Length: 54
Image 1 (tube, rainbow, N blue to C red):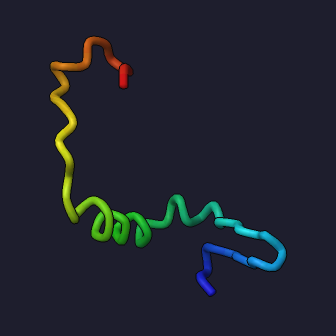
Image 2 (cartoon, rainbow, N blue to C red):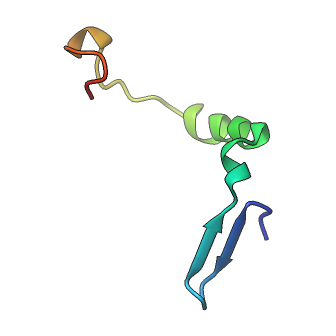
């Protein structure tokens, strides 16, 4: 079992340890497995009228 995830389908339990969100190794893995694959261009910052708009 993963040290950050506790899952028990019988009890409908799924918990993620808070440390998973600050562990540098997980960040590196996410960068590699998610963000290094490809990026989709959705627009340029000049196309956003106000700071904070999405």
